[in-house]
Image 1: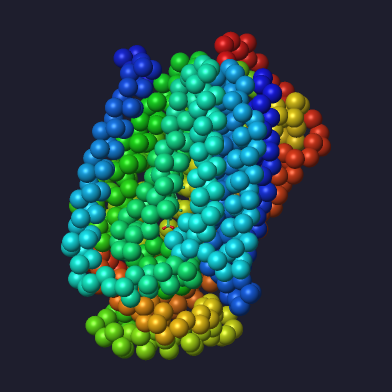
Image 2: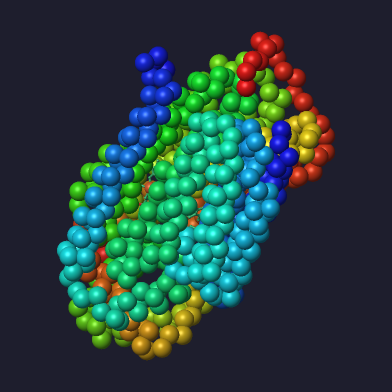
Length: 150
Length: 449
Ligand code: HEM
Ligand code: HEM
Ligand SMILES: [Fe+2]
């Protein structure tokens, strides 16, 4: 490396530059936080049911088989747009019914097919979960996924 | 080994190796479930298996980092560790937490954010352990000689511990939750852990090649500078499709592309130091792992990361087997291989012996690296087909997966090689079978470090 770049200079550039980028990152984070709250997720209210639904989703670690908006595991289908796929995005009762039907038909037991475990949820929790998935589906994700297959 | 207290590293390495074995064995099980999906499906569903696989990985890598810090900081600072007892208490907390987490996953108690599934008490335990560690190691560093290696290492460890605080923040708004989740996941592996990697690598190269400290430390600052300048805003490559603003597509694409630079520099650094080095250290296996780590990290993180980091590509490849392919090679090259390099270097010193079982150890390097490379290739093929059929053509997920089964069989085969390699490695560092000094070639005498 060239002699103008001494160790001390390299160190100072490292510390100074890092602080600079941290500051920019913090500013963009604050802006993104506001954008999420006020714009991209504002299409539907964040009701108590949705909040409970997220907890149900987490308690069962669905994320370690499924992906949600492309994040998670790759073992089972994307669920960020599942309500669109089932054509019940704007139909809370339909969403609840289809989800309940699906969950109760698992595990399929079909030989050679990936299995989803059985979760015995109360109707309340099931409803919360379907509301959470409907809420997740309406988030403005810049047009992702490319198609209904998710 | 010059200081008695460095000995605590031995216990850290032993625990790390135990969890390493758990990680790869459970990984193999996860790979088998892909091949034979009905296997254990009622008793031990895939999500539990996967949690154990990824959590064991992260914990053993952290144990390795802590062990490396306890080993190298006393030597760099030229003083005994502030407290040996605290170091053992810290280790006990982490092991109780790790085993407690596995136990609670098996009985169905887990949180639901990927990688952060630990019950709250385990998260608190990790925080306490991190605080003990920071106190202990900082007190040690402060009372001795201050070098760039310790500065960068401690900065990395402080920052990664600080980021752990986001584990306690779970907003009800899914998009916010996702955004802050990446503050741990991305800012660990693509910022703070890179500082740890670069400083441990610098230490190893200093010892193994005998290049001037002045030169090594200058490289070190340049590497970690490029890592943070690119990696912090590079977080944007995860903010494309989760409800964050559209400008991240440009910020993320540009800065995460630059993330390739530190990995390229680390690889160049390793080879240039060996080429310039005047010392011919007898521990050839440690040198192989050090060079291998820097090289595979460049391919896994740099090349495979760039492969899907531009938003135009990521729009189609996001969350497919391509991600899994990259995740495996990047973690292996950058953090697994680096830890194994350090273990290989430190074990003979900790046991006050000449390097032993080097041929076996180097064999395990090729087996593991070959296995991981093959796994990465087959998953990349699977992911490419998946991306096309599912994201472009629009075929349903489950149908597409069925047509990929041949790749999953090959991935399992690669996994078998990795497991054998890992067990061979553990055996080669634990059991002293033979003393193997590889004859040094003609070289100038070493000076300085
Ligand atoms: C015996 C060898 C291994 C096998 C068969 C294996 C298999 C798997 C499987 C099946 C998954 C789940 C992927 C999914 O969600 O569908 C996974 C995830 C993961 N494994 Fe492994 N693995 C092995 C070794 C390793 C090693 C050595 C590492 C670290 C270098 C590692 C790191 C990871 C990571 C980071 C994930 C999460 C990936 C992501 O979210 O993108 N695995 N592994
Ligand atoms: C050693 C460093 C790195 C490690 C250990 C690593 C590991 C990972 C893992 C495990 C994931 C999956 C996370 C999840 O579960 O969703 C991931 C995602 C990703 N990584 Fe890395 N990575 C590293 C460096 C890089 C670099 C340098 C780049 C870019 C040049 C990169 C680009 C990406 C992208 C674009 C994704 C998102 C993939 C998607 O959309 O599904 N990574 N990485
Ligand atoms: Fe990243």
